Length: 246
Ligand code: ADE
Image 1 (cartoon, rainbow, N blue to C red):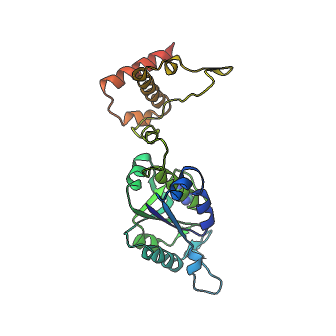
Image 2 (cartoon, rainbow, N blue to C red):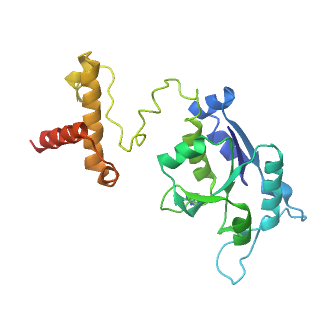
Image 3 (cartoon, protein in one colour):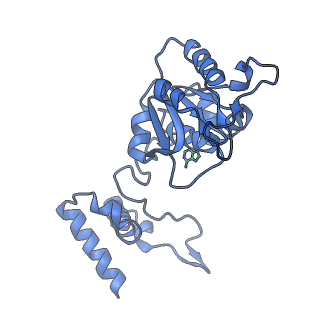
């Protein structure tokens, strides 16, 4: 997959994507990241990329032309058509279903705003989609782009070492993840649940499912309300609810 990022802070985005799973995905050639700085496309002597807003008010607004030139350069750098996404608090809120959908694309261009935002005419004409990473305001789109790059990058085939781990992610089936334990079995902070030491894989899978259902019920009832549970899941959840009562 190819990701192009239009940003005034290309080094920041590159560094965020250089470590861990995403760094490895780039090394393995599963993900190619390219950054484009609108300042490099500013034509005036001061390399201006922003101006005061018409109508007054605080802050600055990003100019159309440097952004358009950077975007055109990014588009022209590869023949594959790209979807252009603007990161902003006004966008549709990101969730795992959206991440899975975007991860299947061959190419995406991410546009990061700064200051008060971007001239609306540019957004209207050049942007396909606006995405928010949550109901709070960041000082720019770069952190949001880094979030999206991470979430999309780890889903590329071969990015995760254990092929199963993306399937076991929280949200992949609409539920939160179950708890995890490792050595030592006995610790001053508590013991590992016995079932995990039993070697009985069917029993372990059932326990994990029950924990995932129970946690989602306790922590994110909104997610649970969206699901249609089968009989087995209903039974497991009821057991969990009864266990937590006593
Ligand atoms: N830019 C500023 N705040 C943002 C948010 N919450 N999501 C995406 N991009 C942003």
